[in-house]
Length: 113
Image (cartoon, rainbow, N blue to C red; front, top):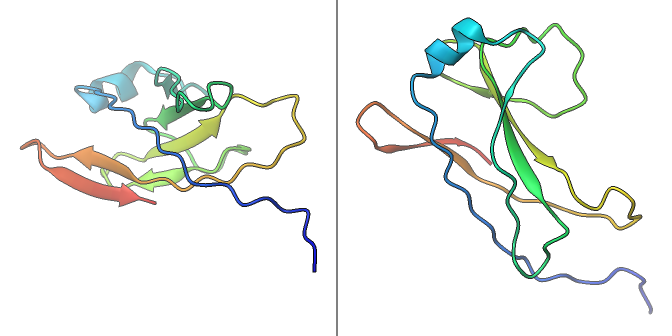
């Protein structure tokens, strides 16, 4: 039996994105705006770039094409992982991710995967 599906080995990439005083950002950012991390990628696949987008004080009633994940921060904050490379490619890409936040003591708190 033949298959045209190739098995890819998982590759890792990591970013540490520090945002201080998130509630202050939420006061000044408009509803349709978001904060964007720097782009990151695995050196083995430099054309596959990613970025995190943070939506502080977001109103979920608006229509968004991104998959938004709610951060249990009490302030209506959502985050999304967006693939920003391979726009002209017909290749499929699967992503497995884990996002952590830090609490006020600097301890890692699981957010989502």
